[in-house]
Length: 233
Ligand SMILES: O=C(CO)[C@H](O)[C@H](O)COP(=O)(O)O
Ligand SMILES: [Fe+2]
Image 1 (tube, protein in one colour):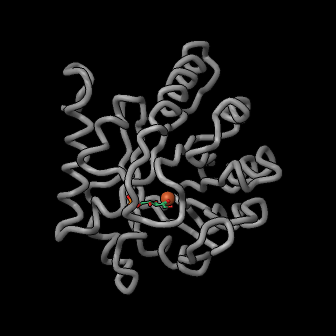
Image 2: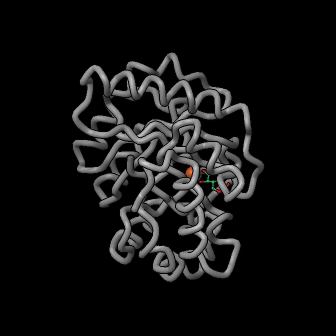
């Protein structure tokens, strides 16, 4: 089983985004960009012009997390800008099928995010339209928040569902199970044990002095939490 680590630049130095991205380029799989509009979440970050500039400079695929009120209007623009993946929130979208299909049609992977209090069951049928299911492990809006333990039960439910879909041949492309918020060296193993295989980490990567080493440490934690025969060589 492969895993993905996606450092969140929400915790990086915004005056040096290209260098901060470069610092994890050898060790990470994606670069997570939180687009926040001060409406869906009470914080304002970056938008399309910054993402368009990052796409040209950053060696990793951009993992765009849209914390915005109107993802149906904005998501296709991020995919067309060259993002690797664009994730919309279930609580914000009014036409998830159309928007997830538009993201894929523009050449990006499509993600669906669920806030901590949002149940999985109403969205199970939508998973066929998605490449990533993001289970928020904090309320979206800010970095450095404490991991919400109760969200692990939803990660377990999602893992069981994804495994069931794969067993019955229901997909020909992977469906990543991503966690975001409070993921660090103490919580990442529990996320992996619950079934997550894609991990966003902001402060755990960028708060220290060596972001690349922090990504490698997180990867080792995930690896150590898996059975010996499933570990990376
Ligand atoms: O979506 C997010 C917040 O809404 C961020 O991706 C997340 O908070 C990452 O930061 P940290 O790992 O420090 O919790
Ligand atoms: Fe995020």
